[in-house]
Length: 280
Image 1 (cartoon, rainbow, N blue to C red):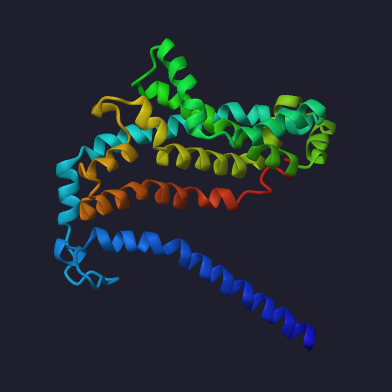
Image 2 (image 1 turned 90 degrees about the horizontal axis):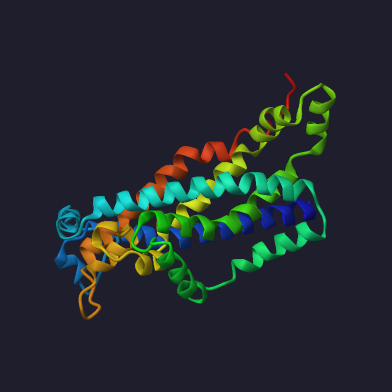
């Protein structure tokens, strides 16, 4: 009985900690939504409330009137989708080779991949700017996509290596015994098992590019090319005073694509782990 009580108390503590963590994560987003629907009178109140007393859509209309949010969102969407696609296409075969051919070189390469993520943006921005300038890629979405893909590639590779190592070699060996060639084995057996990992990696690369600000600020000069995070800074006045209502409305709209994409593909992340494991 004592052990059972300890076990129940431990589970209760875990659930309580998880609930506290969820509340911690949800608080900024819920406050953002509340602010987006508040009129100016409530935004300047000394006693703010969670739920707007007089909700309004004026902040959204003002945000669209003041800044080209749709054009900026289109630029962000193109850059994020293209960068995620390029990163996954390059990282998947590389991850398979690194996972299946272990050795000192592979270990060193994996370590370098992890260490490279510790480099701050400021450390690479000057040489990166000069390289892109030589290729005439400054102030172009193609140049920004290239930067996003390269920046996402190390972590995407590291993620996919773990997924490939989780696929049992015995499945590939069984397919080979049944007469399947190397390519058939990869397509029919390994690829379906890697699908959740590929989707999760693509989601990571997309969200990273969608939310990225520093590279877009430095590399994109004309307003027509700017991405959504850069345009959001335009709601700040010359003295750093934020136009809080429209800013909250625009920031709320900027979070929707990531939430929608995650909601659509989350079943692919958690499902299909044994797809392709059954011989046909």
